[in-house]
Image (cartoon, rainbow, N blue to C red; front, side, top):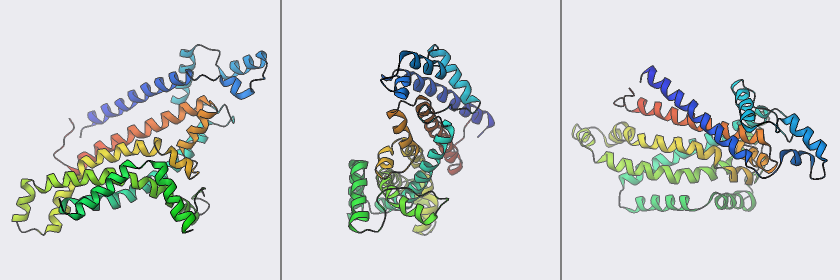
Length: 315
């Protein structure tokens, strides 16, 4: 992997984020509500509304508003919330951190469950274990997040009383309390991811186990365990990296329902509040941060490809 390739990929990320910034800014301009009316209320006088619009720069042309916003972001200034007056970066990045912690827990649990399930299903292709894994995967894909979250909360919180149903405790206050409140949302999200990844691992393992180099490894007298873990699995995981990278985007932007149900103050929930209050700087910053994280995850997936398979060369 050359420095020129890395430079081009980084430039692609920058270009992508520029396009995303233009799109999100344009969409926020099309929102039907007036930010000044949202702040002051419908009974505000025309003079006060005009004053607020001037303070917020809403009376300027759209292209000039976009330029001021983009240049501010380039300097690390994401603006101030129209709802609270707080610095948007101080709102969104801690929320992103909480979502990333949830995503990390969900990914770790998913990989610990999905990869063994996929391997077992591939080794028992067409038999009962393969059918069981397939059934679990189809159920996980088919059931919506809010249904899974509701069932998990009713079972472990209400019926068994083992864990709290909702709420959030910062990890800096109590690691035990934080873990207790994160178990149910992590379990909910992981069940969905396991369904995707286990089927991918199973499919790729079936193809790899039928390849010539795996048969050659068996003929050399290597143990079945070594053949599966050291020869087959390494190549079977390559397409899985793509799925995991795509799941990062889902984890940050698609678990809004999970964060809302379990009252986790993540970036998805922060975006809901921002949209409800037409908090334009918070909406724009939140979407841009999610897009940047998603682009970075795909970039890291490319690096992982090259690390796992030395035959892959990025010119």
